[in-house]
Structure formats: C-alpha cells, structure tokens
Image (cartoon, rainbow, N blue to C red):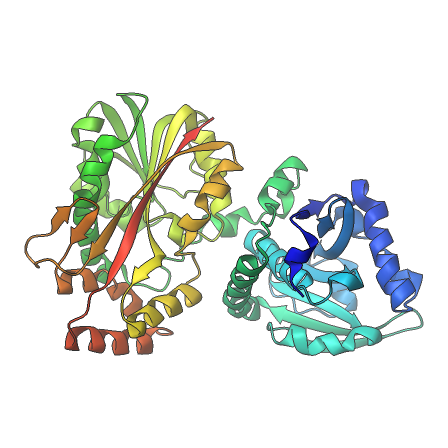
Length: 477
C-alpha cells in the first residue's frame, strides 16, 4: 500500500492521555475488542495516564497508536515479570500497538513502533526493554525477535495469558543501530516528520524520565578511539578546516563585532585558537568547552589566552544569555540526542545570537563503490549521526532558531600533499592527506574489514573521492 493515497493529512503526535483518552481507547476498542475479540481488559492500563503514546492522525481521526510505559526497578510489574535488574536505571515497556485495518501494509505502524522505541531509548537510557504478547498476537514474536527481543517467560493466570520478551542493556545497544537505520529508511519512504519527544517532555514537565547523568557523560566519539592516535588527525583536520572556512567566515552576517564567543566541542583547541586570531573575531572573548579531559588539558597547555572548561554540550553550566556566538565544528555528528544540545545552546545564547555549525555530511560522499560501502557501513555502525546536517535545520527551527545561511565546500583528493589549494568551493588535498581524514574508521573493529579493503583499493588505483564540509548558521529568535 502506498501511504500517499491518503494525501498529506497524516501527522504524528505524542499524546497526553488526559487529553486524548477517548481517541486512544476508541481505537483500541475497534482493534482489540471489535476486530480481534479480545477482552475489554486490554483497553486500558493503570500506567496510561503517565505513559507515552505516539499516535498518527489522518486529518482528525486517530488511525495508529503505540504506548510505552516507564518503570522503576522497584515497581510491582518488574517483580511480577521477574525482569533482569542490575542497576537503578529505568525499564521501558512497549504495548497496545493498534492500527485501523485500512492502513495495514502502509508501514505506518512499523514507523511509529521503531521511532517510539528509539526516541524513548535516546532519553531514558533504560537497562531493560520489555513487551508482552497475548496468544492472539503471538505471530508477532518473529517480528520483535528480529529487533533483538528475546523470549523471557510465560505469565498465565485467570485474567491473562502473556508471553514476555525482553532486551537487556547490551541487547538494547545492539538493536539501537539496526532500529535507527530502519527508522531512517521508513522516514524516507513515508515522508512523515516524526514529532519531538524532547519538546513533549518539556511542555508536559516530564523531565524526570531524562537520564541526564548518562546523557551528559556520553562520548561516542572517543569511547572506542585512542586519544593518542586521534590527536595528530585532529590537529591536521583543524588546520585544513581553517583553510576551508577562511572565505566563508568573511561572508557570514554576524550582527555584532565584539562579545562572547563559545567554541563547544572544541577538541584540542587548535581551531578555536585560530578563530580567535581571525580579524572578524579579534574583539571577542573566547571560551572553549569539551567533554574530554585529555582534549582540555592539551588546549590549556597550548593556548593560554582562551578560557577552557571540561563540560558537555547538554549541560554547559553557563548562565542564560551569556554568548553572542556559539560555534561548533565536527560536534553534532557525534551526539546521540542533538535536540537536547540545541536547547542548551539556545539557553546560553543571547537573543539574536548566532549558532554556527560546521560538520562533515557523509550523505555527500562521492567515490568508488568499495569506498562508499566503507562510509555507509561506518554510518550504520557509528552511534552518532554522520548525516545530521540533513535534519539539523528542522531540529533548530522547531526549537526557535531561524535558519539564516547554508554554505559548503567540497574536499577532494586532486591536489598536492604539501600545498592544499582552495578554488572557489573546492578544496584540493593530496591523496594521502585526504585519506588520513578517514583513518579513525580503522580504529573501530566492527568496520576494519571494510576499511582495509577500501584502503587497499584506494592506493592501488587512480580514483577521485570527495565529500562536503557544510556550514549551517542559525539565529536565536
């Protein structure tokens, strides 16, 4: 079924059960009771009022729904189902997935289920995920096991006959990358924009489910890489970024000529130090922030004229309305929850302040298939999102930023090793120099096979490769 036959009226929305109780119960009744003959006991759960419900509407009619409940390790259901608890993190339960028969085959329900799972996992960081299937739904077991759920136990009583499936923390991590890719595919197919769970939590004052401690300590970039091995590549990358950005900086409309400048995710500080010497920013006071203590230690020793802090993008510790410019380079591709970062940046920017983002976009890579496959595999396995710039404007705009500019430079391997050359929007590097920018991929064991085959091909053939470094600029409204 092609969902486009239903027109462009389908919208996804996180639903407050207090407001949408009639619509949610009504859809459940149509599917569970009237269509499947299940008892009315299945219509409502005691956790509905504080649960998370992702629904799809066609015009004003609710047509598809899934509910997710969040439990503490001490809650009765955890003991009743004998869920494996090893720490004090939360547990999530997926349940009551329902969809009108006329929409079956559209893949809408799949999109809702996988997106809801990913959105909850992003912010809750649960130690366990679980679901229960009634006898009538047992055929769905193959579907859920394909996403990493494992059979746990049977619950048989006078009122229910359930099969319980679970994911432990390791299985959740393993499933995350697969489900994220699935969500991306369905998003491209259905062309329906999913709603922000972060915004829903903020509006409904539900911040208690956010695992801020886990989120703010995440470092998916350095977690599997060696700082010692990465430092030379980062130093080289910073110098090339300076060449790439010099002309762009001249054309950006910065509303102020002096003030407070924050480089967030500053790494070893090389690029921030070079920016502080740029005539455009010479009257700004510079601050640099990075989550890595090794990066900040290097920056403090090397560039003493800048205030360096070991902090993270999700909770910077700065006062509201502190900075005139917040700059980030090669940061957003490493974030699991970029929308929380955008909200924090919005908070610390002054009104009219500028968010200046520079990142690589793997979606723009051009080259032989064997190298493209390496890039694609890394994007699939990497916990961050190396195509984040495709959706960053949407994330920023729904968080009260105005999208004011978009520029790019294409980096290729058609230059000399000793003399990088910029011609218009093209930056020509030597063959070895550009390949060195991909060397971090070889440090990840799950991608090494693809990297080594691509590297062997690359240096054995005369081939051109290129990728875009994109600049996106936003203003705080």
